[in-house]
Structure formats: C-alpha cells, structure tokens
Length: 156
Image 1 (spheres, helix red, strand yellow):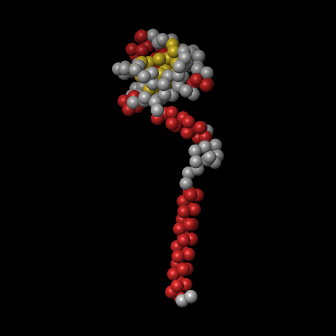
Image 2 (cartoon, rainbow, N blue to C red):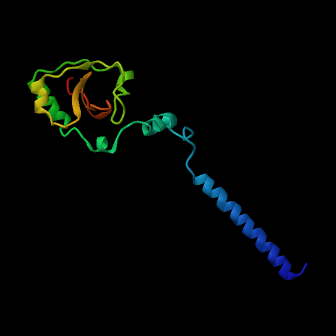
Image 3 (spheres, rainbow, N blue to C red):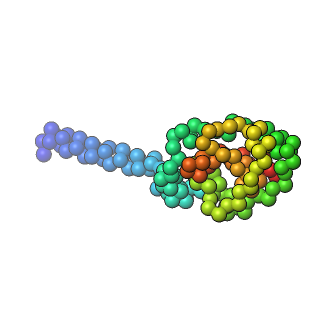
C-alpha cells in the first residue's frame, strides 16, 4: 500500500468510529421511554401515557383555561365560616383524585346546593357555576361540566 492510500483508509476508519461514538453518546443522553425512568421522583410518571392522551381529548376550551376562581382558598373559607357552611365530608380518595382542572366533573358525584347569599359573595363568571363537591368549592362550566377551578378544603 502506498502512504496516501494508507492515510485515506485510516481517515475513513477514524471518521466512521467518530460517527459511531457520536451516535452512541446521543442515545445515552436521550430521555428514557415513558414509564422506564429511574427513581421515584415523579410518582405518576409510569402512568403518564394513559392520562396524558386523555387530557388532550377533553373539550376544555381555551376560554375555560383562562377562567380562574378569582378568590383565594383563605377568602372562600372565611366566607364559608361566616355563612356557617362547615364540616362537609371530603370525597373518597378514589373520586378526589379525579376532581381536577380541565377534566369533566366525575359522574355520580354528590354535589351540594350552595345557599344564594353565599354564592352572591363569590366572584361571578357568566356561563360557570359554583358547586360544593365534598369539602371543596368547585367552579364548573355549565355547558360542558368541565372543572375550571378547585378550591380545596373550603368547607372542611
């Protein structure tokens, strides 16, 4: 072999090995597939694929996303105490975990009728309704029954 031919094949071998090394390094840096990560930092990470897909299929419109309760939990709790709306039973844990923003109100959930004087003291949002669900105060879109905001333990 001539020196230039040796140099050319050495350059090709070096280039090929550099390419292989760079590809293997990027695969090491890549995130693990869903549910295959290490540690327990994110407790619901392994179940992400089911819930993540269902969240995108809800009818949670962009206008619903912009609506917020407009009142703090502390202020709502104070109003509840002033209106003697206390000691409501919390929801069972299995139902409680399904009560969240952007999801429909769970079917068969026990909703308490709130007194009109109490509702009049809460921020008014046309097309939305305040409901007592367990010990939580919930703002729900009337047309879709989508939960827009949850104020936890207001009636506890």
